[in-house]
Length: 253
Image (cartoon, rainbow, N blue to C red; front, top):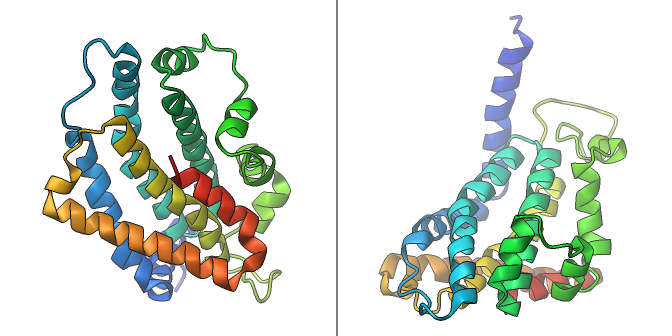
């Protein structure tokens, strides 16, 4: 029976979501905990900085918006990957990691004024210099690859087509998924998830996260899943040492 292209597109998205869920069921046991925690986090900040701590007040005021948007951002990334739009997911992740690095840079400096000036475009600091302070080497390595997607590099567009079979690259099928490309983004996103939790605890030291039993359970699930995944890749793929070192830098405060 003939189907209009739009009908085929919608059907293909359903098929690819189902294939993805069937291939990586463990991921779908973990990801609800991420949403549960981050959707609640803006409301668990606890007592804020003292009135005289102007720099931290500015940081807390600005960082709350990053935290509020975080679960929606990562959901959009995962939703795109579920339907095979790995290239677009990469673009969105690049935006997220850049924002995370900027916040971490100014937060660790305890420079709320600098953070505010950056967003107001008063600051003249170079983004590469910010990256080098937080994760030396990352800008010219993983981040430069992400930028190719953002700037619509045609070679990367061709490689990241979700409907290209890994076994037969010249054979295209709108219903295909590619878990290598899913992992490419997901593996980089995982340490940002823990890193954001750690940054949240640093910015809001009086937070009440662990007073909520459900959040405590979900946090354990998040940390166990991501740390186990990183350790597993460290054992299986020693050639990924540089990448995993970057992940550890993202996580630590």
